[in-house]
Image (tube, rainbow, N blue to C red; front, side, top):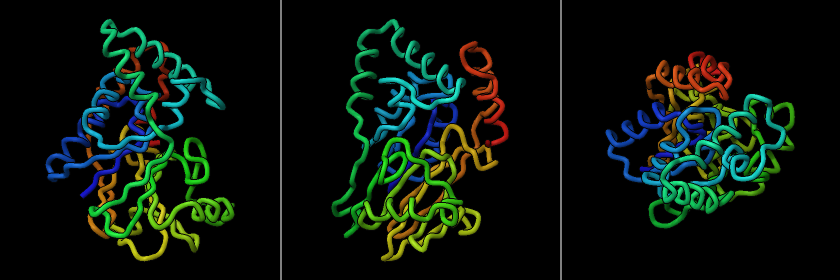
Length: 256
């Protein structure tokens, strides 16, 4: 079994709850699709946990923005990037500072998983889309509004691809069709057809469900998992940091 997490956004309470759930299920391998940081109050701790627990991790757009510069970010997201960067840089432990920057700087924009654990599948991991791995959004309504965008992504992977970025969990097929976790009763069975799965968000869900979200790959099954966590504590931490917009706390409670 493989656990796939994404979009943690410096939410330590959510990440800790998800990892505890992963451990309780006996899952030994975890991969991360990026955006470990940004928006939330605990970037150092979340980076450390991902580095310790994830066998593979890739670069998200907030990770990229913190390393370099935020592009096309709204004011609140941009301010969170600057605060995150300062928080990472101002850790009194210089070895920890160097370790985190080195880890972030080593993140690739795409990763392919293959080998005996995955049968004949080559599984593509990206943050945004196969076409533009760091920052292209694939939304459920793209299936009828801009199907050519989805077609361009489906051309760029062999069979299975996992993405994050929108914080909206679900499955895209190449018809094109979007199947939400609710439509699939939380479980989707892979076929020989190409499938693209959005794993949702650990630290900032936006599907009106405030629980942390991640995915388990179990042979031919995709299982969407929701995990309760201490939302109030994360909200209080955000509100205590002047540089972080209060809206970043409010949205956690509503899952938006």
